[in-house]
Length: 148
Image 1 (cartoon, helix red, strand yellow):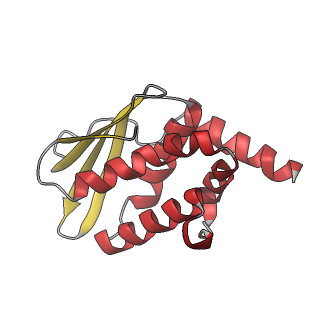
Image 2 (image 1 turned 90 degrees about the vertical axis):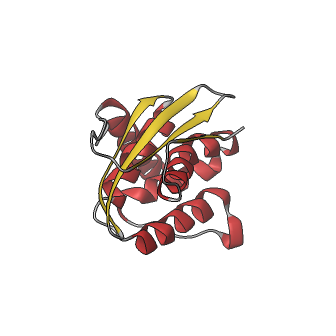
């Protein structure tokens, strides 16, 4: 169990220190602002859709290590996915983090997010970017969400 916890911490800190896709997409055709006023996490998610495919996805903002790492891992996972594949991944992440319906098993680097469920106060940190990207692709204009 200690090795798994060490890996979890290593991946989270790597993505916090060097977040992937941390930039604005100038020609994004979907975006949303996410905010968790309870802990101060705030981000903007940019999505460039090409038909039903996420051609590019990125984020900017600030937050705790879990929030930033989750957003970074999310962008890596969603790039190139269809909207249906992205919805399925969103559902799996949500179930894994909340334990809903027994939870879901995450694979690859996303598996480290499963460790967050052991810290219920941090689940909103890990899900903020996922809720925000979900809102972005479901909207044709800039929107804001809050995870109070």
